Amino acid sequence: MLKEKVETLLNNALEENPALFLIDFTVGNDNTIRVVLDGDEGVNLQDCMNVSRAIEHNLDREEVDFSLEVTSAGATSPLQLPRQFRKNIGRKLTVRTNDNEFEGTLAEATDDTITLKWKAREPKPVGKGKVTVQKKEVIAFSEIHQAKVVLKF
Image (cartoon, helix red, strand yellow):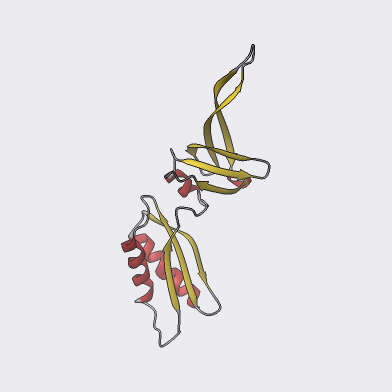
């Protein structure tokens, strides 16, 4: 019952800010409510506070004791949803599949696939030496084990 009520409150809060979207939502056996958000333009502290208040102010602690944690998907968190990939077009990703690991710039993201591009040095077809070639890989979401943004410092 608590989970359904929180889910309704959470959906209402997200409808008020369509740039935010849900990554994860759990209610533990001890009534620990955990919400992880992301946003098309990122998530700031105020976004987390607004969602937290929308949930907390509509639940009665006299009725059920709970704890609530609303966080944003961290910079090092793996990408999970097509919407997260779309917001990261143009950024460098590391993507692990069943058979390979790729690192490249996210060029495109649809509801089913992503396209990575990168440059590689390969032997010349004729003669000695190497030449720089543009590589491209289209990867289906179903094949992705893990995808993370490569952070530059």
